[in-house]
Length: 148
Image (cartoon, rainbow, N blue to C red; front, top):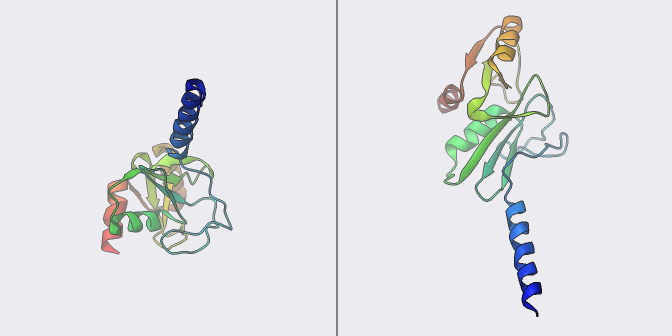
């Protein structure tokens, strides 16, 4: 094999390896994908979350609380990122530690902790003015899960 072909094969292998290491969340296939924690079918497009490992493995969840519980109680040494669906914009991902969370008894979530995620404080405040409840950050969400 010529040196050119050998270099091309190495290049293709490297590009394939890099592409397989997922850095961003992928779309949830609502009605088909299962939650990695509770195993329920993920069905509500205003909810959902994903944990991505350093190697690009994606774990999908039907709710914020499922991901938080799974992350809190699993032995993950290689988490690259955590993501949640923006309640106001289904299909839009927000990094979990940068999102604003509303816990409102008037806004049920799939697993019953009444948590919704928002990309910005204004959207979270607007929903809170309609539905009442408490605004939380990611650390406060994780604390709730510990109490559960």
